[in-house]
Amino acid sequence: MSTKKDYVVVLTFDLHQSETKLYSQIKTQLKKLNLGKDKRLPNNIFIGYFPIEGNEASQLKDKLSYKVKEIFKQKQVDATYLLVVGKDWDGIVKEVESE
Image 1 (spheres, one colour):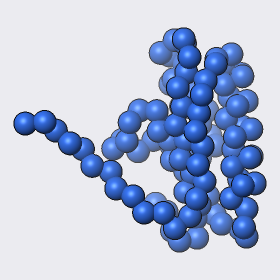
Image 2 (cartoon, helix red, strand yellow; image 1 turned 120 degrees about the horizontal axis):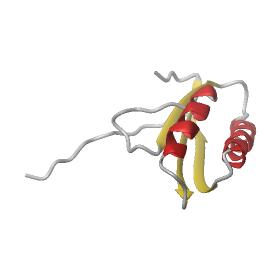
Image 3 (tube, rainbow, N blue to C red; image 1 turned 90 degrees about the vertical axis):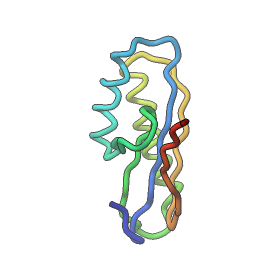
Image 4 (cartoon, rainbow, N blue to C red; image 1 turned 60 degrees about the vertical axis):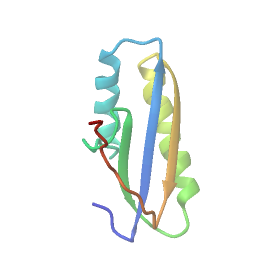
């Protein structure tokens, strides 16, 4: 759960031409970075909360981006990812079912 004193970090990614088992291995590595799953979100979206210490959003983004790249390199997989760091966000998660 986030507080006003946390940065919200959102990561989403696609692996290019890779085996399905790599997703679960990468998920395990991301959990070690405090990036976890919210079962309400699509499978390739990870969220983490990090304490705000000054005005460091870009430093946190750079640090996490480096670590995420290292995970993909370690798994020897090509990937594209989006990493966003922010605070005071508002959002909603809704599931829509057709009738």
